[in-house]
Length: 401
Image (cartoon, helix red, strand yellow):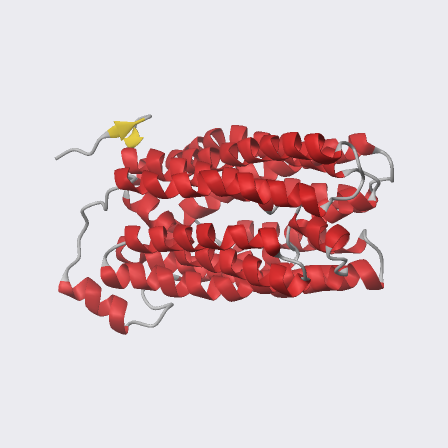
């Protein structure tokens, strides 16, 4: 029986996009300025901020590898996705009572564990629901819906910040607590949308299950996928947590309200570009689109290093182009993973992909925090620009489609 179509795609893509829309609306009220909560309210140094963001992301990312492999082993993606979203939803309210950076780390870690459990099975579920000719468009639409949720979340955060503290430079505890309370609502609604998501029918022969159980994590993958993981490692080593972009914006003299509006611009551009970029990758190839995104990233990070204090227009421009990078590269990279691996190992492949990115985030964020304090706030961005440029060359030279 033919599956129901929405926007010319399997309905799963739309409903999983709606889940991401609601969850991101929640998360973007709470976590984009989490680093400012640590710095302004809990008075944590940037080295601790880098450690928290890097450790939470990296340790939880190990779960992405396991959860992706487990979804292949079970032949089921949906239960693991629900478990991951549910854990993040349960963790968020505890941010309301966080009074030390250790407590805040515990909440952030639990939220990232939830993300680690859900991400690979969810991406595999999206890939399972698409034909090869639709992958760029499908992942682009999913990224667009996810990011429009972020737009809604940040607009809500802008309103709350404006009402509770106006144009004050530093974030206050009361303002952040209000953001947490409001942010819980869409996260709960997202769980109910899973009722409309169906497991696609797919081959689950004894041979496939046997391989999923006994094969090594990298067995069954060709050289191109392994090289792609290596290139992603190189890129991510210079791609520290986005928390440092927020800290840099404040470091250059921008109040919380302005920073939220810059994040709004970033997410709006990201959402607007994702679907056209995915469709373009269906026609021109994934490598070219990803490489273009990484080039934009390198230029943005170079701009962040060279930006002048009090010149807010520079930050607005750079945050806008940062959205161009995300729109070009994020969904397209996930589509490329599906192109490079066999269908029965997609869960494991997405686990490895997200695992490499997440685990590398720990040294990347520690390096960025150290460079910020030991050298200057501009130095982490010079390092990131250099790593992105090298990764772009590696992608174009080493990987063939």
